[in-house]
Amino acid sequence: MAVIDEGVGAGYALPTVSKKFRLEDFKRGEEKTIHTDYEAAAREGLPAPVAIGPQVAALTFRQLRLSFGAGWVVGGRYDLTFRKPVFVTDFCVARGAVTRVEPEGDKLRVHCDVWVENQKSEKVIAGTASGLVPAAATNG
Amino acid sequence: MSTVKTRVLEDGQGRRAAFDDIEIGHSLGEMEWQVTDDLVDLQCQLDQDFDPMYFLQGEGGKRVAPPQITYRPPRWLFSRAYNVRGLFVRWESESFRAIEPNTTLKVTGTIVDKFVKKDREFVVYQAEGHDAQGNLVFRTKRTHVLDFVERSAPREGAGIDSGIKPEKI
Image 1 (tube, rainbow over the protein chains, first blue to last red):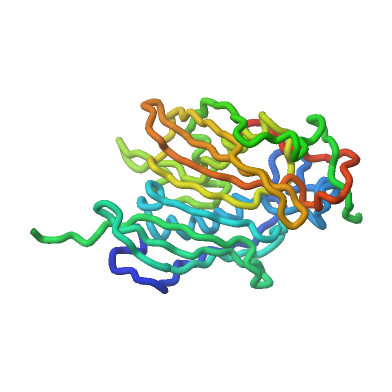
Image 2 (image 1 turned 90 degrees about the vertical axis):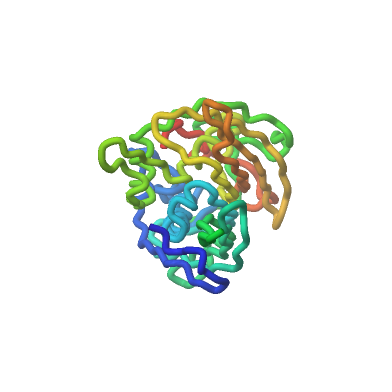
């Protein structure tokens, strides 16, 4: 069930989705990677293992799926920039707001600003996304 | 353990690709990517998203995959062409059709740009996925920084983690 419908307007705050990550969230078997191993990360110049970007962006994707439902699965668009490394034990919260709504075929495209903040309220991911919602039915 | 001010020269998969090795317009080739129920389950588990759309409900019901399941195949194509670890810095994507399990998508990719910014080297590639009928299912563009360390740092030493991974989620 999508929480956004044709009555939405600019400024509407998207539902937040948050997670406290753990190093174990990024393990794949016994492989040592920059996401799971301090020495592997250090060799790349990183101060600590970093989260797998798409698993952090998944907070935004859950937010958009909650917002648009099927209009996210087909018709969803996004443009996300990973601005700062997320470390594997960070807390992150996905936030967002509607910026504009425009017709697209027989539906409405709802544009949003989206971002993910860490526990220091730094924007670690920022960008835009949009999804489709049914236009209001009209009586002929 | 201190961090280094050198860029990794090589890892278990050989020498890391250098910025000059990467050619704009170079095809990353194509792959046949089978989307299975297990893959969809795993993607939902990784993302901790268990929306009913993503799971079978009732007889004759259908499920669809979370759109972000498309992350890895383009990365695999990139890794087949170049041994790049680095970090993912920008992700653009559009979903044109739902992805259902037990389908095969043909994924193709191309290097579309490369640039230097803030003393770091970036590569941009794009990819598309088409279904068996030739319909466009998704399109994506990715920007990848070759190293976390600035390009003015020398390349030396061996890394532990290669960007070349087993082709599985």
